[in-house]
Image (cartoon, rainbow, N blue to C red):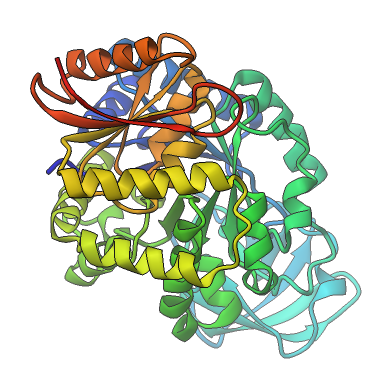
Length: 474
C-alpha cells in the first residue's frame, strides 16, 4: 500500500535551494509550508516562486501553505548561535528592543506591559525555557528564569491568549496575505484565532477561487469555539506548542484526539504539528518516542503530519522527510480501516441532520459502502472545489482516492487530503462520456489498470455530487 497520510514540510534556510527542494519532493513532501515570522515578505515570495518552479520542472504536484504569524510575540534576536538562559537568572523584558543580550531581552510587542502581571509564567519557544514576571514597570518588566535552557534567533514568547490586546489576523497579516493571494497561494494558515469570526475577517474568496483557510488551534478560546471554527475553515492545524502552553501538556493528547475526530467527521483535513521529529534537527534519526507519537497521530486519523524546524533549519531535511514517509507508510499499512469507518458512521448518526450539502454527504457515504463491498481498485472522484474528495476521505477507504479537478489550485489543495492522488481534469464533468475520460486518464496515469473495477463519483450539474458509477477500466 502506498502512503496515505500527507507530509507538510517547512521550508527555510536549510531547504530552500533548488536541489534540496527537488529532493524533498522526491522524498515525499506533499505540502511546502512557508512561515512569515522570520523573513521579509520579499524573501518568502521568492521562496514561493522557487517551489513553484521546481515542482513544475520535476512534475510533482505540491501544495504551498503560507503560515501567517498572527499576534505572535517574539523576543529580540539572540543571534545565530545558541544562548543558554540559566535557571534563577534575572533579566529585563523591554518592549520595542530588537535584540536580546546583556541582561535585557527585547520584545516585539509594544503592549506587553499592559497585558502581563506579576506572577505570570511565560514560556519561550515551545516551552524549553520558562520565565516568571516579578515586577512590571513603566518601560520594562523584571523576570526570573524559572526553568533554563537554550535559545536562538527570535524565539516566541507565549503570553496567555486571553490577555493579548491584539486580535488575529493582524493588519500586518492581511497585508502579507494580499501579496500571496495575488501570487496564487494554495493554502493560508491563520495563527492564534479565537473564534469563527476571526476566520471570516480574512475576507478572501471561498476556495478554489481563493486559498484554503487553515485554522490553527492553539488558544483556549479556539478549543471552546471549536465547532464554529471547524465549520468556518477549510482545514485545521493542531499547533501543539502554544496549545500545550495555553492549556497544559497533560491535556494535549486528549485534545488532539478530540480535534482530529471532530475535523474528520466533518470532512475537514487536520494537520498534527509541532515537535514531530524535533531531535532530527541535529540527529540522524528520530527518537523512539517521536516515531510512536507520529504513528499514533496517524492512527488517530490525522490527514497530515507537519515538520517545522526539522526541515527549515535542520542538518538533513531530506532525510527527515524520507524518515517520516517511511513511518507514515507503515502506520497507514497498519491502520484499522474498518474500525475507523464504523466510528465515523456512529459519529454521523449521533449528529443532527443539517450537513452543508446533504446530497453530497449521502452520496459520499454511499460511495464508501459500495466501494468497500465491491472491493474496487480505486475511487475516482471528480470535484470542482475538492469538497467531494474531502467528504469521501473522511471514511478512510482502504483503496486510493484519485481526486480530479479542472482547477489547478484545487488540485494543489488536494495535496493536503488524506489518501488522495491529485490529478488535473481536462474540463468540467457534464456527461457520462467525460466520466469515462477520467477513468482513462486514471489508467494512463498508472493509478489503475485495465480490468480493474473502480467507483466514479461526480456531479454532472449544480453544486451537489449526484452521480455514482461502478465501472470496469477498459
